[in-house]
Image: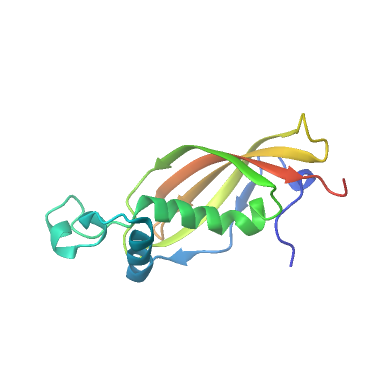
Length: 150
């Protein structure tokens, strides 16, 4: 199975629809809260959430971000030398326990590296959606990717 792409395999304007999806479980959210020390009751306490805007536990936004980055690895950054930056991260809608997340990535631009002739920089925007096709997250990043055979 091919993992990732070389610089030449990206086309500006292309939209990559990622095959992998993930249903976020209560355990996923609880473990992420524990690992990152985010103990806000909005992410952990059903009773607290009953009196809040959505009336239910919200999944931690950085879990959703991390999950979506992971969903894109096999088709976007699997051959990457580095993710150079993340920008314009936007949490566009709430994510709840039981939501299934999917993602798509659009290739916005690409250019050869000025300092490393065997590498190129690909600029992408990734958007994530829940099972109701509501956009819940978007972000952009520059990825340093090797050229084929160089």
